[in-house]
Amino acid sequence: LKGFNGGFHDGTFGYVVPYYNGRYFGKVARFGLQDFSSVEVLDLPSHDPDLKGFRGGFHDGTFAYVVPNWFPKAARFRLQDFSSVEVLDLSSRDPDLKGFSGGFHDGTFGYVVPDHNGRFFGKVARFRTVVSPTTTSSSA
Image (cartoon, rainbow, N blue to C red; front, side, top):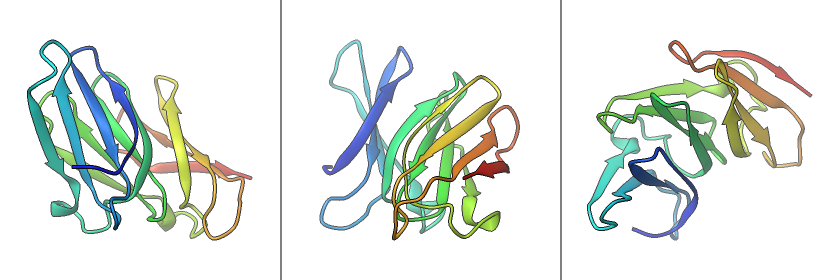
């Protein structure tokens, strides 16, 4: 396991976000903060082959979110079981919505920060975090 870009914690576990290790990959690793030795891996591409190459992540207390970079699909997984995965295809709303770098949430929505999708762009994507994630809006 190598080639991560970003990380976050939930108070119990630290999470590192998969990006590029010679190729884009999608294995999220988490480790216990208490002992810093127990490691678990969640293989996102086993749920959808496009779930790879993320840049940053965040959590809302129930789910963790990984931010899509070269691919248009974001993923979220339950912090509690580290296995229940849901996919959000941002490009289904707008084909420009890929190439993000980082994100955050406000308690109701998740936001991903625009970076470069073949060119620099400025569309922030927003999606609900409190229900099944669906893209609700974007702005230039």
